[in-house]
Image (cartoon, rainbow, N blue to C red):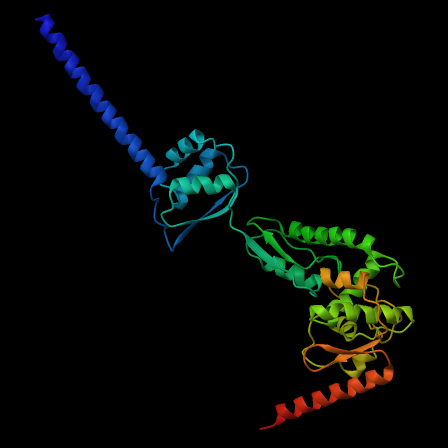
Length: 338
């Protein structure tokens, strides 16, 4: 009787082991499917956005992902991160995952640090106050952006992340300017009529505001360099505007009273360079004033097409001015016509 019981017991044990093996296989398949298969649908829209805070550990990250609906199981995410070696490589930041993204995709993106990128563009010729306003308007940043000294920022497009400090963003813009000047200043043309990088930035800011056509910047710079060499006043309209509105568009022409106003920046009234830049110049304008072409041109005026016409003599300049005045009269007449 005992000999018969043992085989029955062995058979029963074998069935149990088989069942356990099948269950383990099913669990493994389910885990693999949960990891590599489609994830949860986004709670709203087509994507799920999750912000993983700096200093978050693996368990906290997994919980945040599950709470946001990016993954179905925080426990499985923790296990997968440990098994793949990603546990110590997960990066904080803002992430955006498409609806039903597999957990494998979520884990890979966080491991690679594929955070959502935000951008702030500071155009050439903006004042430092305008730049600070743009940084303060970016809703993903924190803190308050200070107004940098005029001309201390490098116009460019800057990448930022959610939670970045606005003051640090301004500091990056200042550092980019300083780095560029450290690169360009030693390569400057000899014999320029200014002695310091700061003076170069002042002149470059005037060039920046005088023309929006990139190809004209070197010729405009050459005119101003020639004027400084000959002791002539720069007579730049944007310097008048800066004295009136700190660089904001007037929305009208310059008045005779403003032309005659004795502001520190009015280059119709002062000799040499203004005391500060009138804007933040970009690389092209800085390069133009540090290495201007060698010309005899001393004058330029608008040509009616958005650019300027240049002249060496005052007589030629007067003829160019007369043509520009005629263009202005014709445009005024066309605007007034019924």
